[in-house]
Length: 283
Length: 289
Image 1 (cartoon, rainbow over the protein chains, first blue to last red):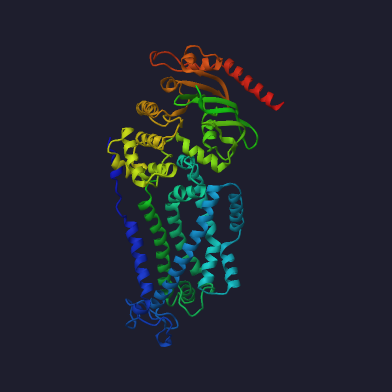
Image 2: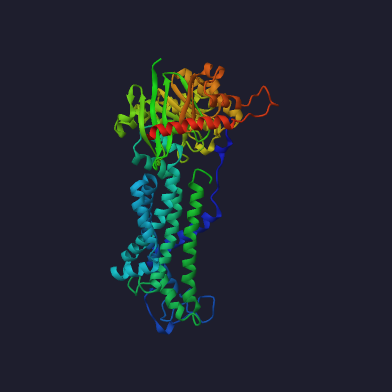
């Protein structure tokens, strides 16, 4: 009666390799930006304005991805922009996750009045248009890294709360939770030891998804010039600047856009890949 | 014989007031097996859940007493009640697929009970768990202890749940349709296993099922439930020889037999249903007055 199901091992998928690879590259680039950036990201030189990327004619050595209309190096600005994008992704993503998941877990497992309060809050919250809400918040808080992070947390905790609440509810109805209660375990303990491990794969997916969303939100806020001080390079800011000169210098718009796209995609794929890997049950 | 579990006039209601259990009384003697039969929706499982304190949120006990080992559970404060239940009773659940935590290995799921309830050391619990898994005929227990639930078949999982129910030597086990989710060949083994374990450990067992065939194999006494009302409580032999209530008789007649494979199924007649429905209505009317 030896069960072969125990022998199943899943290989690390291509998805995990690609997304993990891009994010690793990005993290390294962001961390070591001061050493590897070919130029000072803030240095302007109007004589070197709108240089094309290296494979086209009329470039200057050292400006790999060209320059913008003020002559600032696109690659260097992207590397520094990645710092902000990743900072926001990590901090805002994690905070949103902790707050939203905790509230969702409590609502879904305890039900009753905690659920009613939290759920009504979520309903009301979700009726606000998120981007306007964020802009309003930043306008009140003033621009800056922590304002962006707070704005993202305040807008997005509802996503976690909703999904985790539903998951916790369905797990809470399982017999193993009843068994734990029959064994005289405390409700709070049961929530942590029985429910939490089973919603963890979902939390991981949501967390990485949220990091991607945080990157986008940061880009949107930079795009409308509400991010951090205007002289620090941000992907959103670069896209906004590139937009005005897209016919003369497409690279100023396109490279940050590609970086943004790949990063957001990688975050979501990383989540899916990790879930497949760490979920003990093949769902 | 003195009863270990004695339920007196237990009523359970939905939050909106509609009755689920109607003044149920039944007794399970120490070391004996009591069957609880009825059609689906009759409230069989709810009796078990009421005893264990795991009623769904929408239901609540509206009256009656549950005497467990000489103490009325309903008179205890909730924390004390939970502790008391944990120390004396355990559950063999219906669906082995949802009764083990999918994210934890088998070992800790069994040893946890021993550590929690009996205050044993991890090592003692570990040894005991291995021994129990051997007792429920699981090959290579040491390996299974390290497996996750999804790596095992339904029959294996049900064996593990049986082992885990008996682990802390409870004096009452509630088996809630323990064989319903299994296929027929495995059902028989599991049934024999539960009966063996029950005899060996001398545990009182409340056996919830809809299968009279199963009841006839393992139970000493039984209660027949209809719409949350006990229509007949009897000793096994008497029940199968001479069922008193017409509904019980009709249920018995409806049980298909293996010895007569060509015989058609006998449904419970409308007359009998009307009769027992009238009793239930009468009961409700009496309560309403």
